[in-house]
Image 1 (cartoon, rainbow, N blue to C red):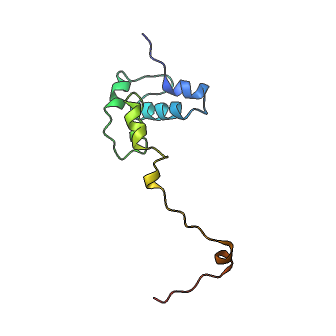
Image 2: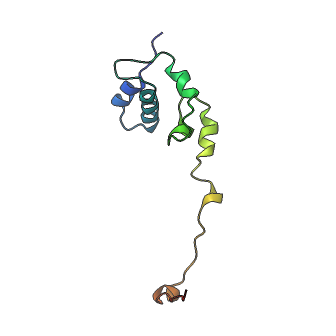
Image 3: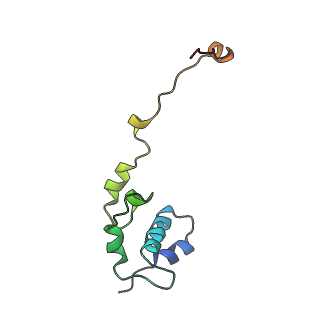
Length: 98
């Protein structure tokens, strides 16, 4: 059975982030438009390049766990916003002596 080539899939749908990640990982393991490395999916699953920006988003793994680790809606990581009323906004900032 022939496996779909992630690089060719990306060329057909260049706006897909998922296909872009799949294609980048496939290229990292030696795949090209004309050649698929044997076992490239397993190699991506077992990738040990933890310094790679895409490591947590690797395809062919348990995506639910990966996406939980990079959840952008995690409220505990948000920076607190300070309320400023109109009068405070009009005042120039005060200099602080160091």
